[in-house]
Amino acid sequence: MKRYNISWMLVLLITVLSSCKDYLDINTNPNQATSVQALLVLPAAITGTASVSNQFNGYGAHFGGYMANAGGFSGFGNLFNYQIIPNDYNALWVNAYDNLNDYKYVIDQTEGDDTQAYASAAAQIMVAYNFQKLVDAFGDVPYTEALQNNANLTPKYDDAATIYQDLITKLDESIAKIDGAEFPTALNSSSDPMFGGDMEKWKKFANTVKLRILIRVSGVPALSSFVTTKFAALDKTLGFITDDAIVNPGYVKDKPNPLWNSWGYQTTGTLSNSSRIPTEFAFGFYKGQKLEDTGRGEVIFKNFETNTPVNQLGNEVDAPTIITNYSTWYTGTFSSASSISNALGVLKGPSQGQVLMLLAEAQFLQAEARLKGFITGDFAASFDAGIAASYTYLYKDVTNVVAAGKNVTADVAAYKVANAASYLVNIKLATTPAQRLEAIITQKWIAVNMINSEEGYNEFRRTGYPVTQPNGDAYHNIASLLSTSTRPDKLPSRILYPTSEQSYNAGNYRVINPFTDLIFWDPN
Image (cartoon, rainbow, N blue to C red; front, side, top):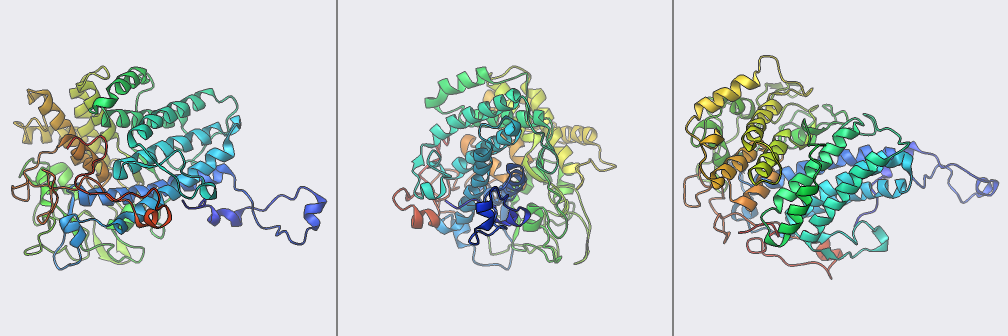
């Protein structure tokens, strides 16, 4: 594991000299900081999670059926056939654990200090958030022996299902710590770039992460008792997030949002990536091949009404090229390298915030929980709220405000009319629990498109929705045209443990089959 990633802060601090002996010690550098305040590390850690979240989104976009190759590019071999190698996602693993080390530092520095209870609780909530993502991608991972630096350089791999259960405990403890603090130092927009110090929002976020964990394992027979017990104990009065959970430490053109930097434009004004375009499978949920969705389609896809370039992953024969100087997911205006307008949709602009969890996802989680009887309430109302929340986020500008001229209520109503015969949009037309679940997961898959794409991939593996036809055309087949997967859906089941583990933790490293070795909640 990496050492604490705090070196960039050291220039901000001066060691306090506490004795004449220390002062006279010519071998001591008085400018060498030995510790950093937790409230300085916390915002850097949260911002780090935003960057890692973007990496998870990219991995999910490739594996979850959202992203294909543009024309004129080669070298896609591993993606085309899903013959993943350990080095492919080494950075994802390393950066995720590096980020977790920062949170561990905050937790260690605030232990037993009631005045720092808020910082400690926020850090522990983010530890749970990040470990769930690691488990969903890799399965069993270092957990109980992780984040110990030199004290343990070869941590064991813990059982993924056991980690999941302990994350619930950690989230419960975090909420209790917030509630029990007597003289806490308040967080603010400087120390908390996600919620600006609003601890009620932190508690709701923790409760929503718990909801996601419980829903994800709700179909695992061995955990049925755990799920029932924890749902019964879930704080329904507290509720869940009521707005998108977005990190923004002050992104600007020269220090842009990670998503924009990856799929929009670099700081020089150069297009960040010209080798990727949307899949026909994803585009079909907007353009009419499966559903009609003009409202969201127009703000997400360049030239939606005319000739948005789309492709099936693995098709090099007639793969279209990008529109010159434009990412297909950017609908603003490129005039020159120095003149790039802000927009709506997925790629809004360099100063947009980075989404860690959409309100739409939270609503669809509640819809499924209500459908299955885990919590009370109308699943159809939560489903409709999820669609509306998706429109709302996509209609927001870089300042996180719905743009003038955009009417979410009217456009959602139009969406329902345009798809009047489809239970995937009008869930009350569904006649079976399976159809209702299909509608919920399909709409969640649509909502996280190129925002939190890994959640779409996770839910597809868990439920098999949205429906795919492995032998169908590109609008109905989610997988690569050249897939070598042995799964019925022709997708990979997971990614492999990275080369860093192979090199430095060889005793615990595992050789994995990316098609047959499943994450524990994956029934396929």
